[in-house]
Image (tube, rainbow, N blue to C red):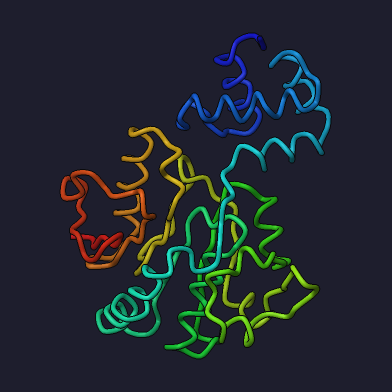
Amino acid sequence: MLGTYEAFKQSIYDMTKIDLNSYKERQMKRRIEALISKHNITSYQDYIVKLKNDKVIFDEFINYITINVSEFFRNPEQWALLEKEVFPYLMERFGKDIKIWSAACSTGDEPYSLAMLLSKFLPLNKIKIIATDIDRTVMDKAKIGLYSDKSLKDLPEDFLKKYFNKINDRTYQISDQIKACVEFKQHDLLKDVYPSNCDLIVCRNVLIYFTDEAKNKIYQDFNKALKKDALLFVGSTEQIIQSQQIGFLNFKSFFYKKA
């Protein structure tokens, strides 16, 4: 239909340094072909020309290929575990000045959830969370902090009242107090330098889209970025196979401790 996907992947890498080989091919190819069809373009080659010459189409492509499904307090039982066992463990082990990295943070739901939950333990001016994503567009959305009611369905009611302003029946904006707790930075998990000496790294529901080889490299790099006994929090479908071989021990469900 569209010419060679291999040449397209190379062109994208040359333009953006995003390596599409590290994503599961069938899923990614289907997403890209749907986007190309939407613009009535008939070849990968013509699409590359458009990407080089039309910033709107380029930004749309970057936004489209990155996976941006996010909610506040997604999987509430895991956030309950974070509150009751994980944060108390981290503070007992490392003190209250803990370094948290929310990796592949998408539209900010996750780092903002972390900041709100931490506010039960610390004053807001003591909370600093690093939040990174490859996609600058979603981070721009995160900084604005507007969210639909669907994104907030699992948010505890007290946080909704305390930290959100209602814009209309379906839209809320997060408070500047919580925004100030989070520092957003663009970051590619496959090629950029990782933060160091982290006490907690949160990366959930993202690595399922990567190949096993890319996944293993990222887990190894996460391990290096953590302090000894620090924790990695992963998504519900992302249990690390043979975690001990890359230096992790099971801590709780979906939490791994650096050995």
